[in-house]
Image (cartoon, rainbow, N blue to C red):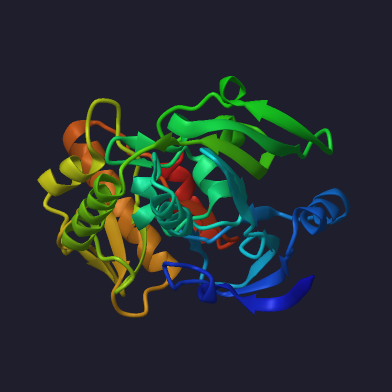
Length: 297
């Protein structure tokens, strides 16, 4: 198992932002992960870090990254997938097998552990649609449990995994038979939509910054506040989508958080709506934590 001290975490972040982390582990199997979870004092478990903003300052934490735990198998319509497998890989594998249900994952850079925890969704599809069950590690009880769909409390951008001290290990899904051309057409349309409306990885970013309020769109509210193109240091609100921040010029984490705070404050002032961050912040900087906590009330 790989262990690195003072690891520059920006190498793992789709935001391309992050300082040196005190200690990072890269387990290569569920067994290695469980050893760490049971024996090591750690601060957070992450996957592909596509929904994370790391502090640019020294991060005095121990982080476990599951990206090397990337096994998956198909048995007819059933998919068995480990926490570190990336979404686009499975989307393409489903296409090969004429299976429908995961077309939306073609544009998701995240891995299954995080996507299950946040019930990732787009274009009318979501993780919860095809979810059957998962192996979950209960940190408080230090044991592995099986959670069915009814146990997961899935909702918009949420599940019991985010509410409790649980970590996804493996999961089982059941997809439906489809036609290759129709599945590919949906995937192509999803990719085209992202190309036209999102920055992809041309610029570092973490996708949508804020969750949508009930019966509304964070992007719409931010657009009405005329925030597209707004900058803070090297961070800028994407000119095609007001709910995305891009790292256009060596942005720091403070640049991003200050810009987020401005976006949050503008919407609160104009519409009395308090947007909630969709991304995760990992760091110890006092100024960053203070601004972040104001947005996480």
